[in-house]
Image 1 (cartoon, helix red, strand yellow):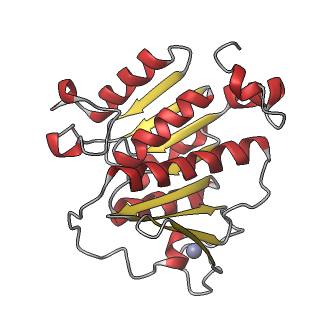
Image 2: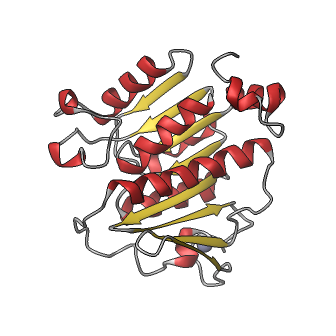
Length: 237
Ligand SMILES: [Zn+2]
């Protein structure tokens, strides 16, 4: 508990809240840029069990933002490199890694976890994850980032708008490599992590349910856009 003293000193967390965090099981989908910030934040807060899905290996061009990996991790699997980071940082955390490209056949992976965090980088994967979470009734914290900009959305199956409600045309966009800068990724990953904390401890003065939070790093501006379920959404309806 000494490790978590500064968490516990927060009235709204306390020992009881810290115990809830220690009992939580969170699945992080993607161990890249967003995943680096989300995994380090969850491990710091004392989330008891973290699952990590990724099938990529670390490349030199990842290191402008994926700080959970380092120069010695080049060519290693990101799942191995991320696991190593967590074990060195906080060996009390249970860590499960899944080296695979997520598709519908892996939906049962979600059963074990309380919540899923979307840290994937392609919309194709994001949509597959969105659909799996809706079908398996798991809360999903979506995050996306590009250049100086990013967005976060909390998706509650059956209750709130999903990714498909919002971007029905994005699924078939051709994959392209876009530029991205570390502070944008860290900002969005931090907001996703805060949503995890708020959900577990029921601290939701405002929740990003049916609200798309849009970040513009150049303007230092956070906008909340109210959204609704799309009656034509193929997965929600
Ligand atoms: Zn939908």
